[in-house]
Length: 129
Ligand code: MN
Image 1 (cartoon, rainbow, N blue to C red):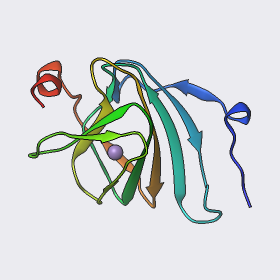
Image 2: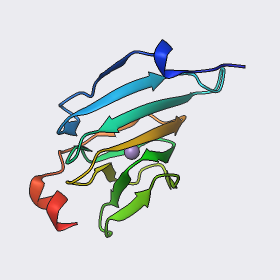
Image 3: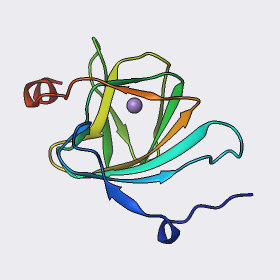
Image 4: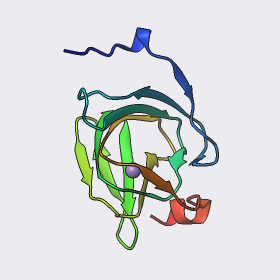
């Protein structure tokens, strides 16, 4: 058994090369023992979002607070309320983050997934979703 509690974990500012706006990330690595399963709690301020990216494995997003904006390239944005979950398949180009008016926190669980970071989500792209 492993337990991860916030007071024993360090959070850090999300890498500005891969995020627009401010977000704080808490990494929980190896959460499924030897399997390559890593969890990341990410707290986005209003307007903050990831860059476009893909994962080599499945990513699960579990929304903890606020509303998660999630967009797959070529599709309309989807809004996921707290308590909701999204699964992102390997290779799907997408971004996720907070809406412009309110903060959002999600837990991302990456299953055998490394991330390939692509271009930032421009303000124009963000607004037109
Ligand atoms: Mn993702």
